[in-house]
Length: 451
Image (cartoon, rainbow, N blue to C red; front, side, top):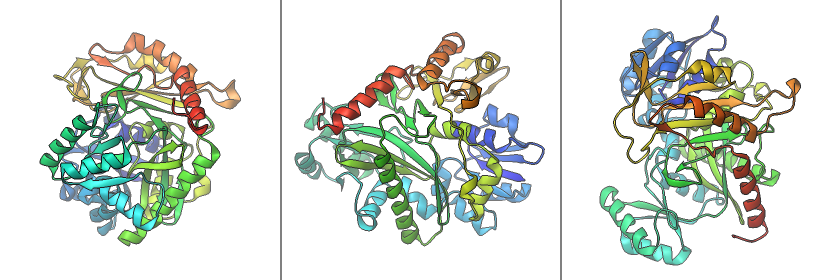
């Protein structure tokens, strides 16, 4: 098959790795914002241009005559690229522009769920004045302040974490209203987050393993919000602090949300959906939906996905998904992003660096390229998350199942040797002590304690 792919980040490199496992049969054609060094090795051809340029994207994939296309990032979805490709007869993995609003417009998502689903979202208000924000804070207590549109995971500010009190929060609200005309406030939730991503092909919804992303910039969940500093999945597909009833509730919410979105737009949904949930003392709450795979979580699920990924995603694109053929290896997975030292607030000037991939591979891990390009014999950072180091635990039939904490420990030993100067990472992603504390925190919360 001739496969089209849109995007140039770590998510897209991970998808590309999975797509071309059968290189004798499949070839990859990519439209990207920059030439990702990892994707470049795998692709038959790469066209460079703005991923919002729908006409150029359509013309490129018409010219190379692909069998189907996968859309990686959210921006081309909201630009209407899926509508254009499908309108031209090219099957595409990704929701329509109207459906992608579930990610691109936070108020639309909350309003739709409130009207058509009726449960599972925090109390929220879309506001355009300081007094309204003050009244809402007085009603619910601490809040999260969110821009309405896309932020790449970096826009959220949480009262009690980023702002010290009501006055500082209202100053931020006023500044965002002055800039954007409106702002979204949500009651602050207390609990533990997890992600559930699914394949959707018309009426069929097939879940992927649960994942957990580490959003904050520094160890201990400190610093600003990022696009994600790393993530992990467990060998059993669950999370040690997530109970079966939590998963059932999250999956029910996804099913009802998809039904609501199809009813709202009149379009069949063919693509990915990413639900970010929080377990609270009162049950599951939806924090957000993304109309594509997560980044970095896509790295984890593409590592563990078994079988013929190209055939699977082609089935999604044409509405003929065989859910019985979707399987994931029973192995823990871990990835950690290396980023410029000042990321996200001040990534600084581009850094030219080398990375010894042979040492990474010898240690049993792999490199996933993201916001980086070639610089002669070296690489050069492009200001965001640069590369991820990713790996899997041992297969069950080859020895004891490797614990997530052991994978993290081995990865830290590797990074102590290979991490380039000027780049940094979060050491606590997947750390055994961190996971234990999450389990204990949820035990206390379920028992009615918030200490």
